[in-house]
Image (cartoon, rainbow, N blue to C red; front, side):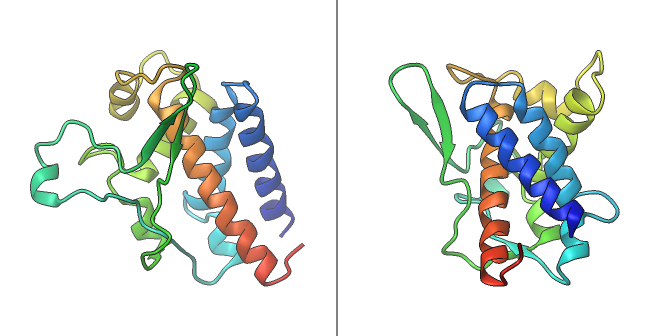
Length: 176
């Protein structure tokens, strides 16, 4: 439980830092998401016997997706001053998916999943700083929003949703 609580606190703190202008904080968010959700024995699976998260909004049709270069399942909000934010990434009106299914959803095209985005940022920009990007970051770095790279905004949106979902469970079961 101590690791779970610390990871949620780190996730929240770094999302707040990012939203206040510390753009490098998305890298720490990816590390915290990886600890919580990915790997051989993710923290969420140790704390909860089963876990489920809502699917992406605007999921891709498999037939269309095979030839699709880019697909944003979310809305992107622009404030008119050069700032943007990914909103409505997950559809909370649909039935939740198991953690494994949730992580394997195609996110930005038919080859990049939520798991791959988290792992790529963690492995290539946060836990290690490699000279070359993998296929995921090579793709995401080609798509720019006015104020940031695409993967920065998406990892923050994923982090905000996961944090909100886990905090809601904590409140429901009075986990402090």
